[in-house]
Image (tube, rainbow, N blue to C red; front, side):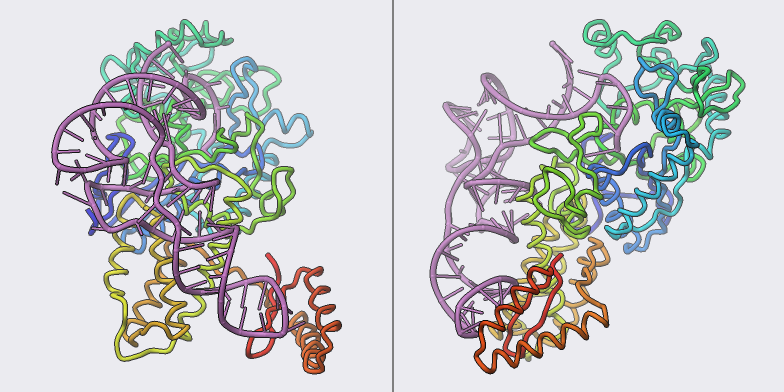
Amino acid sequence: MSSRLHIYNTLSKQTEEFEPINPPFVGMYLCGPTVYGDPHLGHSRGAIMMDVLFRYLTHLRYKVRYVRNITDVGHLLNDADEGEDKIGKIAKANHIEPMEVAQRYTNAYHKVLLQMNVLPPSIEPRASGHIPEQIEMIAEIMANDLAYESNGSVYFDVLKYAKSGDYGKLSGRKIEDLLAGAGQERRTLEGQEEKKNPNDFALWKKATSEHIMKWKSPWSEGFPGWHIECSAMSEKYLGKMFDIHAGGIDLLFPHHESEIAQSTSCGCSTPRYWMHNNMITINGQKMAKSLNNGVLIEELFTGNHDLLEQAYSPMTLRFFLLQAHYRSTLDFSNEALQAAEKGYHRLMNAAAKIANLTTSISSDVDFKKWREKLFVHMNNDIATPQVIATLFEAAKWINEIDAKNMCLSAEDKTLLQETFTFFTFDILGLTQEKTTNNEVLNGVMNMVLDIRKTAKENKDWTTADKIREGLIQAGIDIMDGKEGSTFKIKQ
RNA sequence: GGUCAGAUGGCCGAGUGGCUAGGCACAGCUCUGCAAAAGCUGCUACACCGGUUCGAAUCCGGUUCUGACCUCCA
């Protein structure tokens, strides 16, 4: 299975070979965030998973169009707060425009993704900018008699669709089970009387008087339902049939199931491959805004959170996420993050050493085989943990070669350098975090280290240690080596 | 209640029936004025009970526990 890319398809529940519909073009869509709050750790996972895939597909010479949306039309808070949306609520509370709320959190999202070296998508459409497209799609679904209007709102007729279509094919849900479950545990929801069936979902909601985010439509002044934006925007930019649709596993139902229902009800095909990233857990429980156990990405970077023992850098987070496979849950803890931080530095140290390695006539290691292994792991459903493990194998060799315990041929050195760089930086998207590049600081440090050098030469350990201690307090580590001392700003 | 995933060494996490992933921690060593950093070496685990097999962490059945979805969520 190794020579070509395989990905796990939630639709078939199998790992399948990836074959684009129209090679060399590949269309992929990721359900982005609803921008009503600062991005938390969970948001980083899907973005990074797709970023690695985006990078890899691009390097495989595909012409990739990557669409990642921003949902800035607030979803309903819950059905009890009928007619009010999250973004609108925040806007009202702060006496600002809803778009100010959306913009603020969109900026925050972009900022942290940039820090984590996530490439921008090809297109980043906003739901609020595609209201006409959504209205058009709703009208088409109604024309196909799979949606109905009720009191100014439009609902998708799930029962009717289920008869002819294949509702539940993604999430494995059966309509009978849903109906059975509806009677027991389901909360009594307001507005249910407008629906023919409790499983029907809104395509368009009529706004109440206090609702501030609303648009005109043939049915009422209101706002689009939660699922329709993705159907409308993916069709607009990727066409009626595209390759990859991704998102968090918690969106599998009802969001993605509903998307399929809507799209196939107006002439679109179900996307070929569905990829779902698993959740980040905290003490074994899913991290979610609604559960109030979330850690913001910004908080992780600053260390400003009760659960955090220290700050963790953006690259530490990226590395931490890539060390687990995207389909596994990943448990958050200080211990795990500290392990990731050290592991990341070990990898970076090895990367920095390659260029200065001395070469011999032959090599002690089969680097071609090693290189093949990396591709095998990437092709195996983006197995980033194994890619990292394989890079660590090379890290050990690099250290051994550096210590003159192993040999490396000139030819293999080139191969090693290119391959290591390619996977570490180009594919996994890690970067060497700059510790210092400040001329003023360098000047000061050179002087301080020179004073300490003199002290050391005079065996004035008190002064030497005092300087070292003082610098540690200031956040700078001193490393004494054979060729003098160097310094490093602590992350 | 229904549906679906998991349970791996001190911790995090791979694992595609035979060839002990990897990282961190820990211990020893190298280096060092002492440290730190870095490097090397060591550390053979797979929830439980049955079964299939020459051989099972991996396949099958059962048990226990945990989680996700069924409601906004990445």
